[in-house]
Amino acid sequence: MSVVVISNKLDFAEALVHLLTGDGIEVPLVVLETSGSSVASDSEKSGFANNSGLARLRHLFLSSDKRKALKFELEAKAKARTRIDDYLSTIKLKQQQLNVEFLETPSLNEATIVTAIKKANPKICAVIGSPVISPRLVSIPELGTINVHFSVLPEYRGAKSEFWQCYNHSYDTVGITFYTYDNAAHYGNLLLQVKQQIGQFPEPHDLRATNTISMFENYAKVVRLFLDGKTSSKPMSRSTTPNYRNRDITEEKLIKLYTRLAASRA
Image (cartoon, rainbow, N blue to C red; front, side, top):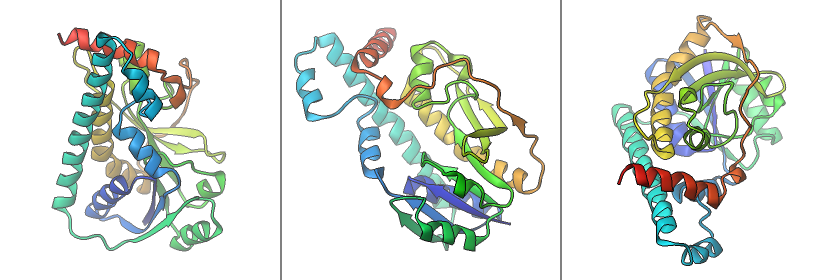
């Protein structure tokens, strides 16, 4: 009953392996996609805002209220990252050293990677982070490939769901969804959904941290149930919300949301 973990975030992959092996689930292989991961990491550390030199220069000419909003966003990001790091450290402290093969690759479609996953003969592939999974990988595990998305699917399928949920006051869709891929590597069947408790004036990065912790708290349980054939999966319905992309979060929208959030805390 082996599980192969696929990720583009080393700390997330290590934490998931700790949780799976701690539950008695065999993990012979972790595949870590490194292409663009350093860029993604830098982007996350600087928040939703564009942190390029040109953007920073432009910020000097913004009004004090707008600069305050952007500062609020970056501080919120740092607090959320600390919450996640603190949680990950508790997972690793409870577990022993990993005895798992790690393979790094710039592309999950490399022939050697596909061969390695096939050789591991997984019952399930468990995806964590946001690597792009191709149909050829989806077809390898005997039972299927599991992923998790940070919203109550089918709503807000795209990137940075928490930002848009706060921007649109769409708080009833905040949570996480575990699902299987279909053969085309698209959203397949729903496995488990966990809605989050929302306080007054929620902030996107804080919601992301809560979702991340909830993901780790539930991932091993979902894998175990799926391995044992005890999940009640159901097909995904159509979304009524846009499929947002990273570039849809403009500086104007970012300032608008965080001006509102900063005012709510004044």
